[in-house]
Image (cartoon, rainbow, N blue to C red; front, side, top):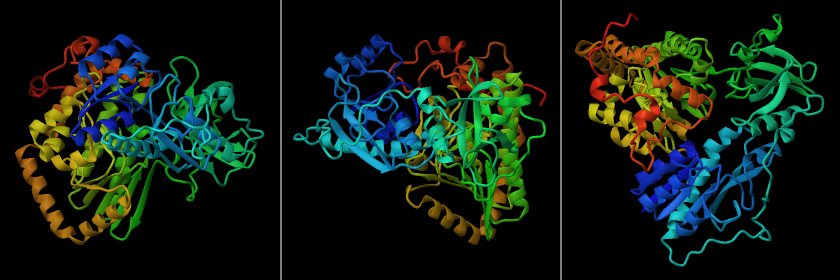
Length: 585
């Protein structure tokens, strides 16, 4: 079947649909719809889809297209729910159960005939977390039901009927900042968290701190501290601030200044000198829910196995966070465990270097360099841990350098449903480092490594296991138990595994020292970062400020004109792999 995905962005749901459909043998194309109706019409005419699916849309597909081509829309709401702020209202009103619905496009938004729907218990968690987990999983289940129904000549989608007991939703308006406003003198902790969770990612809750208008992001409850409601009463070493409520307190991890050009960063960094110099620096309580914006790295030991959990906001790892994780890894290794499990985050495993932090720095090239060097140092420490078995438990999506990071481990386990993006090139032709020229080819071979890094397309967990990028794909249910069982098995066979590991590392070093891989990669990255008019800086800026990317690698169109759009011609792989020049690092 020819399936066209029309989306406002190649986001996590669109990527999941892309890999699921591709793995199932369908011919899939993606068109990023930013409002150019002529371009969209041309995409339909060129591809002539049997089915069109819109996983994520912020504007309507023109009527002439959905009348000509069967088009299904994913709506992140229960049956009957309509409007652009579905998850926002559900989280802020603290519904117990929510859902996702796959419906046919019609003139009235979100009111078309229903092809499938799924419900799930609604966690009190950030909107992005609910979307990446329950909503996407539910949408994929709806997708398969719809595809099965397409094979049934007698199937007819049922019309939306508000008299039906299952139609519990209703038309809701777009949520405004007035709806989100926090009254610190009246709202209790649970209400404040619900409002910040509902605005997570975009747009945040507009508030004021020390006379500065800021958007609040990334919050969790603080069980011990008390103070004047609304007052900032503490900060954490990780950069979060603690604000008192009428019945407790909340930690707020990220702020985004309201002014034009504001970038979402650690709360302490955004407030800067406005914070009182004598503000207490508080370590988080042991009972503080994890993940949280306060304790980004946590070590848990069980016998000979150490579990190293790291949960960085949006999976981005700044220079300081890379160093923090490397220190935690080296400290864990110093306790002589037989196995270290790299557990990653609950919503994103890792997305590589921290583009927001780089964009906000006074010298973006220098900060980019510091960040990639710190990332390399972390991965080098893992590669050289030849006295410990390292297991990477990839339970959530990974991208860029974050998709290379687990390859430094001895065993890579990936949860079913995870999407991997082991490439960098769509960030302004960024070459990439993290020892990828060593780690990726040794698992998949050089030709496939080049295809993965140049194709710039996501792959599924199942496909990753098929090509050797992962050792095993594990069902979502029981993932943690399966990881633990694997770690126990590795610990039991520790001596033999370590002997083989040391022999391989010695042989690899003789063949080509790690330092040479690093030098060759960083030579190219130096050019990316410091070359005048480097397209990387324009691509990063567009990413941070949510402007359209230069190109979509999964577009139905040929990438004609891509080089001109990016600002320079794309280097060929042979160019990128020339012997490195002396750069001075």
